[in-house]
Length: 478
Image (cartoon, rainbow, N blue to C red; front, side, top):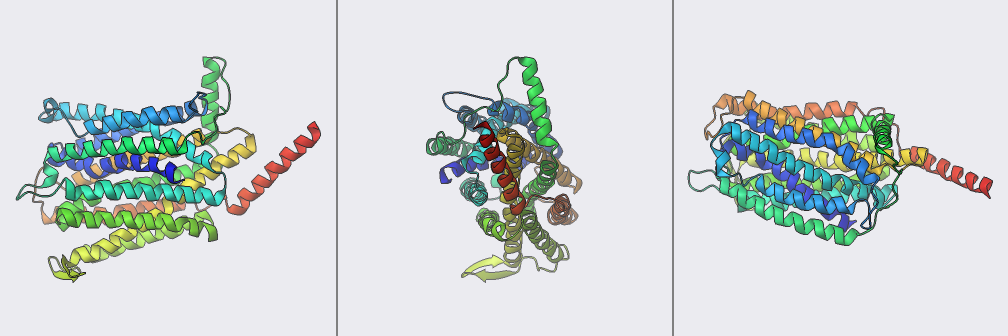
């Protein structure tokens, strides 16, 4: 389980690195408008999402001496690391012409996302096959999210200190060379993590393809049949709609909070690391709480617990900061260190939002694994790759939507690219968007699973019925 979770750390460096710094890089360092930068990122994620069912289907039906998951994991992972580096190392030819820069970013980010797709879908499917035990499945997904946040903390959070410290009046986020250095370090780390994951999990997954193909027509028919079964199942639809809305909320929050750190709180690189690092620590704590909660509550109820934690923390932040109840600039001490009162109030409540998100994400991951197992029990056909692809498709479409929404919100509040000083009205609107948009989305996501029927008892009944049917069939045959 620990070896498998290393792969999530590599994925975290790509996903969180881009979500955290891409908009800042392209607006603050390269001068692209927020709307154009958001559109470039959103287009690449959208195109990646369209290919995910195909990748999952092909992985399900692959037979090779290295298994049906590992060839894609290794090749896709290495390509992902290389293309990620060039997402920051923009050639000088494209830097001073907005239209050429826009085209370069679209093409390069398509390469990043497609290679990530090639790596991550088989990786997720491998996780479905590592264990079929319900509690171990919850633990595995929790460990995966803990490793995601560990890499996020060691990477994007500490990047504020190691790569983006302000130099005099020049902001660290306005220097392109800082992003290039960060991209190189992250790319090398990805390669190491992926190879370590492969070495520690070698041949853990099943290698029996679901169906053999005889010709191209049969292949197309099988693909359409598989995708229809995956996407239109009653239980899978609820999970997919939930994860789309929930992930969109997380991406909007993650993108906007970077602007809030930089322009509203106006804090140093070290303080940004404290603020963002606390979100990762609390997210990991939430992920570790998830298996305990799943052991005592239905998974649907666990989602409601985590969701209301997110909503309550952000509404409290809005009530304190939008009304100017928290005095600006006032100093206090924390562990004998001077710190502003706004930061001391902001950090724990902001981290609380991500605590709730940390509870929710591994739980909904296990819900999709449960749905895939139910399909396997009902039909006798393993479509783990297809279900993993559908789940990640919903997440990637949400990332695309979240980035685009964040770019539009930053533009709508009146933010000016490559401008250090923003108007008070712009900063207030930016804070309002940061605190209020994500909670509204999370509340909407919770409504989509209010009738989710898969409980521990339901799954146990399905397993018992399937086992009884197998035994009956064996008796008849004998």
